[in-house]
Image 1 (cartoon, rainbow, N blue to C red):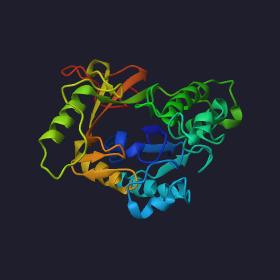
Image 2 (image 1 turned 90 degrees about the vertical axis):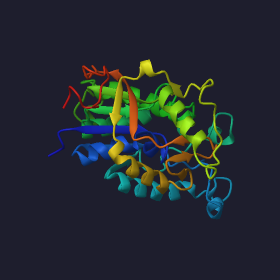
Image 3 (image 1 turned 135 degrees about the vertical axis):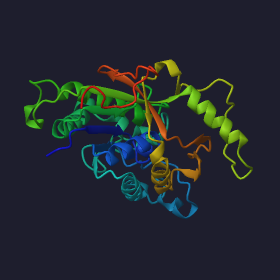
Image 4 (image 1 turned 90 degrees about the horizontal axis):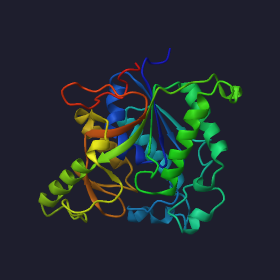
Length: 296
């Protein structure tokens, strides 16, 4: 029998799940929920932080996607997640790279995927898993990467189609997802992380933004955040999962940086914006503290 609580997360590349939702995933797995991850690409165009693996780059051996499959498996083992799917099958959609790059012109890249075809792959998963909670990116994809934006579009469209009784019954019995969330990083948490990084010892060499200055659109005003998940008990699992993605992430606990070398703090509190469903808020704090509140 399926678990009483079922969560489906849709991410663009291996490592996105650990950075954005690693503690949340570990927490709910430990509590007995079924956590399913759908990954849209294998991340073939990622920059490689491990010098001895530089030959895997897309402009050399083009073996990074296969290598990142193993990194993802190792990361999910740290989080306790046992159900991971590739959208349409491993390698069906290729990492698109950033806008304006040659990778973004490839016909097989995810950015250029037919939206309904890609959504249909996800409709089948939604109808099989029947999640009460769906987690993906906002319309900006968090930071504007084409694959993140496309993952948002595919997840949004698939969620709508999956609940339509007359749509593609061959893909399974209809399922209307009660709650849909967008991952979010509140401005206050990021500024606090920057201050901690600034005050850290000299061994931390990550580049730093001004904690009191203007922040990119990636970071969300606190008043737009509906849900704060306290998964601090699982911060170390999240950090271990991030370390498993060694080609993409440098971890200097409790900090990390991606290939752009901009540092951030590894948070055990992860935040969300509820965009479908009704939040069940704590009467004292005024925020929601459980993604499944009101539906399971």
